Image 1 (cartoon, rainbow, N blue to C red):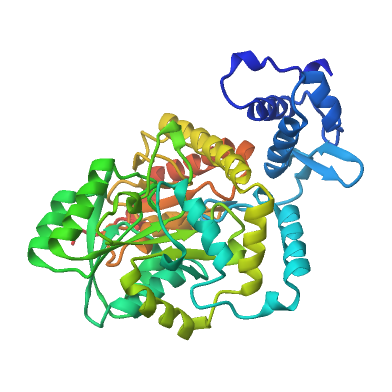
Image 2: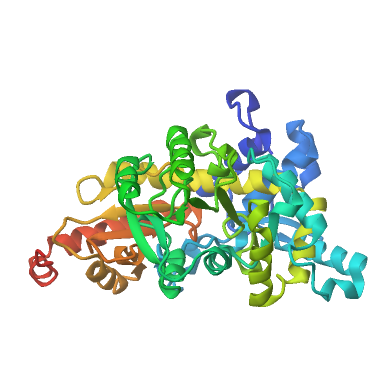
Length: 468
């Protein structure tokens, strides 16, 4: 048991995180062998003189990170490492921004489903009222308080994913030919929706602290948009965060030039680098912001559930369009989520997910800062799961993608993130679908692949982009 001893006085972080990190280091240093059994929770707690809930949280985090696995009625065991699967060939998926399933509380969610079935019976499969299940909307109001947003259930519309929310807004308050301003680069799903509906899209460049306010002001003097679509916290694909001043400036411009703002938020629950951030909606006092909150990065993305918080004056038209699309988001999913949030430690779940994302981001950022500077340029990501790179201007990320795929590495080419294709040399990678102990090795393989791509004279000639 001595190897499990932790001096909790050396670190100011939560004890469960310290215990998690200590056991993780034992596993990575091979001080614990594959399939070795960990001490029972009570024994570990007694040995370290800590509350058993602390050990439970640490073990849960290790299980989510796939360092350990649990056998029902037997205990917890060290998970076999990647070296034990030498015959298994896998692609390195920098193209996937959805998290691995092992991060999510599948077993607890099963229990929430069981409670929902027991309490609701046949009504679990009825349609819900247009805005969504009232107890869930009340719970979401409490949840938004933690994000510095004061709201009420009549302002909330339950939706089937963030992209449906964008679709509903476009169908509700925009007409053919209306103008939408977007960040460039931006989320491909939103770009696709705008293209499908024939709205005019104007792109505004994103700087390291958010959208270029100077360019935005210049465009507003000439063009009147109906909506600005933005992801102000850990923007996709760049990972940058808007400064507080920039958020306030956007709202002031929205009032002055009379347009609305769609805020697409998927990750502002987390404060990377211990920096407190707030959604743009938290600063809105003029009812200008339509706030879309996706659970795709913090809960199982396959649930296809999100919510929209909106000014009351557009509620009825939003609800009618939502009804015309699918009547209502699955009642089964809504009630299961409500019972999970109510009975299974929603805040604790967010704490665990935060530790996972923050640790992965710091590992990736450190490696990129130390190893990629001489071969590509990249945005100064503030947090999240994405990093946005640029090759030298005469090279194409589309061709880099093909070059890397032969090596089993997948990325997303830059043109996907623009409404009108501009420079082809940019590309995005995501670490969302990777285990923490794979990130450095995967980035090393990516780096070497980029070096080989750039260093091959044949490729330099073949992939050169003509000046336009």
